[in-house]
Length: 79
Image: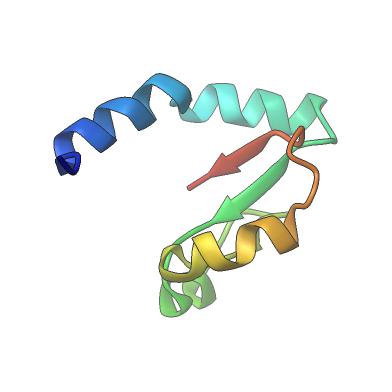
């Protein structure tokens, strides 16, 4: 039987850690190997984004992420 949306979200939460803005700010100041990915829509991106962020809209994330970030060891922060 196919998994429900709630089951899939529960599995994702086990693997994806959330971070509060102060923690992200600290990581961005210290770590240079991480990538900051803005998943908002184009108009939101154009209205403003965090310095150093890359834009990959949520609607195309699955298709573009492996090409944009081929090293699976790279730490990613999505917002």
